[in-house]
Amino acid sequence: MSLSSARIAVIGGGPAGLAAAEVLSTTGLGIDLFDAMPSLGRKFLMAGRGGLNLTHSEPLEVFLTRYGLRCHEIGPMVSACSPQSLQDWAEGLGIQTFIGSSGRVFPREMKAAPLLRAWLHRLRGRGVNIHVRHRWLGWSADGALLFSTPQGETATHAAATILALGGGSWARLGSDGTWMPPLAEKGVALAPLKPANCGFELRWSDYFREHFAGEPVKNVAASCLDDKGQTLRRQGEFVISAHGVEGGLIYALSAPLRDALDRDGQATLTLDLLPDRTAERVLADVRHPRGSRSLSSHLQSRVGIAGVKAALLREVLSKDEMQDAARLAAAIKALPLTLKATRPIDEAISTAGGVCFEALDDTLMLKNLPGTFCAGEMLDWEAPTGGYLLTGCIASGQTAARGVLAWLAQQTSPHPSPGAHV
Image (cartoon, rainbow, N blue to C red; front, side, top):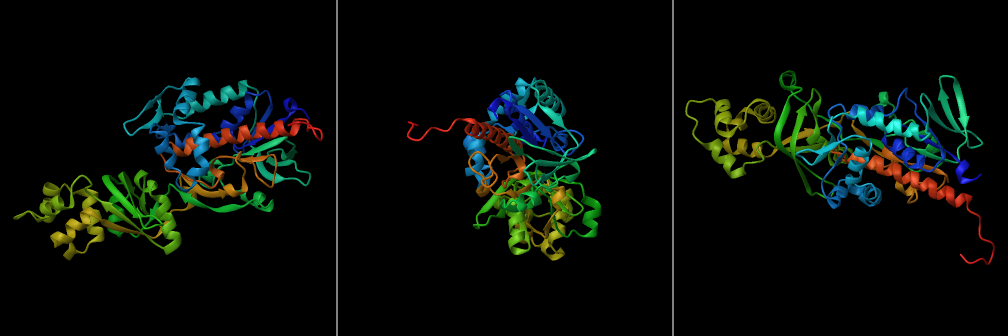
């Protein structure tokens, strides 16, 4: 089979799969893109409902550190698909972007749908064949790809395959982790899927839950310890949920908090309710004579603590501790919340775990399944929200596609005769 006659299967219609198909579509190869859902990019669209965070404008050397323990593996892929190149790519689709005050990059329309429509229009125009309602089941005895479809089970052969099947969260949108058993049967090394960018459970009082569930907690700092005992600190806001805590600030620390739960059975999240004031200033303000004013009035007028922040203090401290100025001031600057569990994996924005990088070569081809490549969230990496997840998925899809082209070229090139100069 010549390279020009090869047909490539891309399984998964999220950002990683679409990015892979886009790279391959420029070569004249036959591309079949399969997805289990009735339409493509469903999780991508859901993630963009609040404003699609395409990437981040911070310097690349800082950007790469956001991938934590997998920076070494993800870094080269992201370097080849830099945040600036993603902005240029979006604008090439007719989607203008802008950089927000936080450095995050968004489409000007703040929506995912226009970008997805333009992306799919380009792919179809380049001859990519899209097959929806095709759920991948694994392989047949002769190596064919098996799919469940509305018309029944079907099989197809491909010269090379890219699996971009997502992680294990938001199953209703197609990312359900059902690809793990077929890969495990082939001896592929897999790490258990875990929630990432997730909420956490803790035991609120009935009063607090009834009155403050859904309330945002703004302008605070949160910290926790990593596995080396070093303090990680982030500033921003989060949301009180009926079960515990969630939101951007929590997601930024979700990996070390989750790992502490796995290791110790509980984790401590420490809140600084007034990150812009020193501990000395807070103590002086709390100790300032309040005369006939109630403690609540004093905290509001002198310290700037009211509403949900005041309720959080009362949730953690006893009545006697609330009356102890030193103890109260210390809690304002370092309020400990004991987390009991992560929220269920299907609620998480993303997942950690999946195909271990040790099972892959540098082109993302499975070492024991030549011609099969993996990309996107099904790989064992994680990153915080803020554009890092989407950039990593697109970058890995592009890497896998380039790997397919290199592998096919190798398969179709004539072997040198013995003694020939190479």
